[in-house]
Length: 77
Image (cartoon, rainbow, N blue to C red; front, top):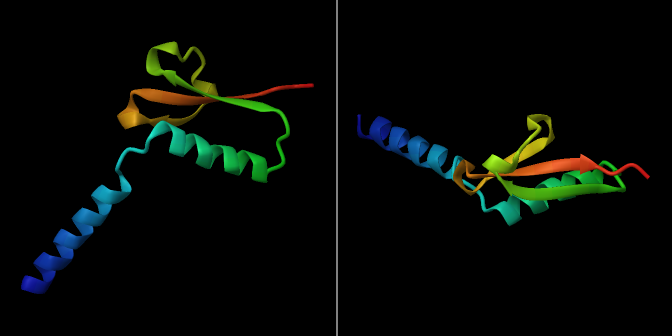
């Protein structure tokens, strides 16, 4: 019984650690690395407040506890 309780507690703690909100700059760097790995040459990533998002299709991430968004725009040459 104690083993089950310990396993349950450990899984709950692990789930909370995975769901922890990320700082915007850290998440932006991760997204930027993925974009560059795909060979996209010209793009813009911008961190904005939720109220400044006009097109939800441009949102590629949410950070700071959901108060800010990271938007992506491909720049055509």
